[in-house]
Length: 138
Image (cartoon, rainbow, N blue to C red; front, side):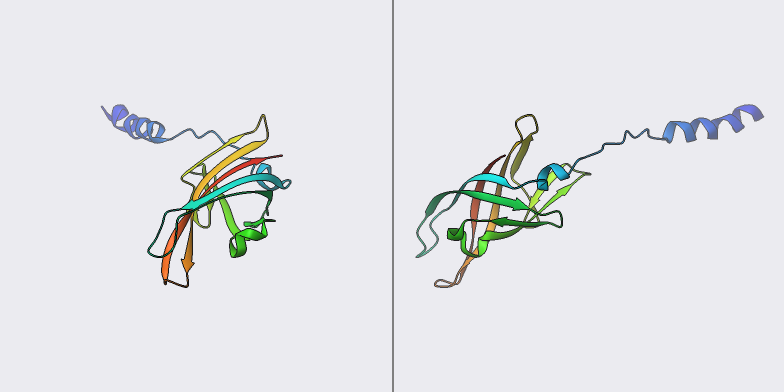
């Protein structure tokens, strides 16, 4: 009986250990070189602000420290955004919010991002969201 009592804590300890495989996520794939970007952004009508649907092409540069820069002057202050990636959740972030949808195709060195980005209309005083769809290729 004494042996069983001594053996039970050892069994419990071993059973509670989780084996964890290490996943080496290569975030350099995101910022190793600039991306060619096909960008669509849209928003619905809001008060006096009419709906908009815009298509742009250009270059997107993701920097290691988290900045994202588009070379598309028509985006105005949206030329400068922030990006991030969470290893623990495998989630891609744009402007501190998880992307609505994203995937990367490493074989073709391409990526798709869909996210909302907040904006402000000074004429009406309303905040609203642009929905961004990005197709990134190299």
